[in-house]
View 1 (cartoon, one colour):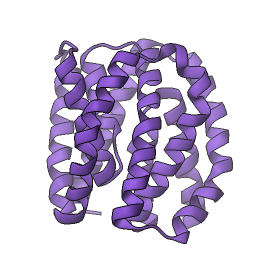
View 2 (cartoon, rainbow, N blue to C red):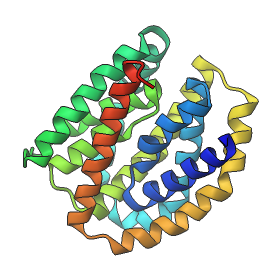
View 3 (cartoon, helix red, strand yellow):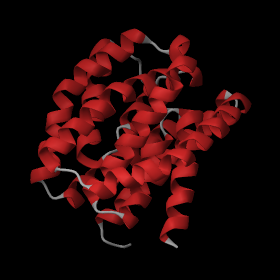
View 4 (cartoon, rainbow, N blue to C red):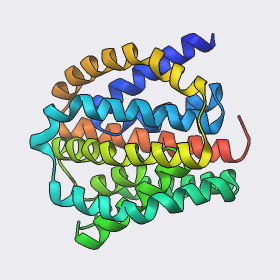
Length: 240
């Protein structure tokens, strides 16, 4: 049963990551936590997401906004150490509760047409939030997704810039996690077994990306954000 669940999680999450640029950590991390210890689930997520970003780099190069990418990276320099300190010192359930309420509230604001203007300071701030969530709960996607949705970013630019940012942030986060939280054989063996599923997901995700328009893409992002928010809320309250 656990093996079947693992296969389903990795395959679907890989398809989402490839087709949207943000689906893997949002979908995989909550379910991987049902199968692994928190540090194991987070590190498996980081490793596989990094592999997906590397594999797609050639295809997404033309869609990357390098200015935003650079500012995200600057912000993450502050966010990454904040996240690992949070992971090591603060009650993770309280953190999840706070994040879940913010995600749910902001998502409903986006659904009801709340929009913001993109600027340099907001880029840096969002990069910092994403970095802190990467090393604390293994979910860098929600801040990026909320921000890009609020600025009505085209799906190609969203996917390209997000995956390029992940390439940097996941690599740094893995190093930070291994140094401060440790690692083990289960993490690396599980990641190795997942590789064939990831590559199948890459192929299927590319096909899906070509077939969804901007309106469907936006609806899809709202669904994923609400799923993430309510999952974190229920998990933080110990209702699973």
